Amino acid sequence: MHPKQSNPHRFVALTVITIFICSLRTGAFAVSVDDGQRLFDEGMRLYQHADYHGAAHKWEEALRIFEGHSFKEGVSAATGALGLVHWNLKQYRQALTFLEQVLAIKREIGDRKGEGSSLTNIGDVYAKLGQNREAILFYQKALAIRRDIGDRNGEGTTITRIGEIYFDIGEYKKSLTYYENALNISREIGNRQEENMVLGNIADIEQPYPGEI
Image (cartoon, rainbow, N blue to C red):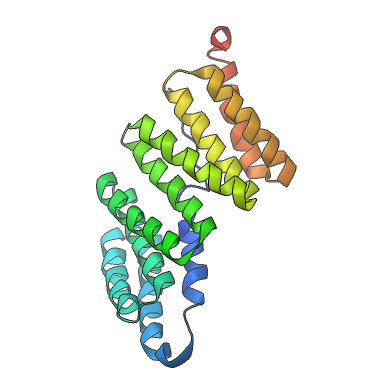
């Protein structure tokens, strides 16, 4: 089997969440939104200590505050965080429900980059569920958006994901094509971490399966 490497790009929404939340401390709702921020931060600390249930409780409280003030970015952030909890608990169907909600919000507020990330994350869930056709469909949708907005880093990440799917179903030539494409992008933008990961994936194809590619 293809040894899955730790991929820092999976669920990059966790990093984006912090950026979104920091933008919420504004205007007449400062006190209430700060309460949401405090709860969100407490959830983050619990999450970092692998207390997923405790983190979920804090994020659910934060979500209610953000919803009460119609802060779409905060709702998106807290909802994505809850999806992340279910991902780590291997509750992929539940994670999918939250991620679909995030996708809807990204589309509503016109956040194209966030939409691309959400589509990739949904593809990741389908890949975990073994629904490869659905995974590729969402990755391709994400790829189209990332290319359209010039998100080269996201483009490379999504191409790598597609390569992983083709590897898992034994289509090694297709997998290698996607990996080589992703490798070129990672080198072009100077992403050494992604480059090293893709090189490892290519080696996994070339060494055990040299006669099949």
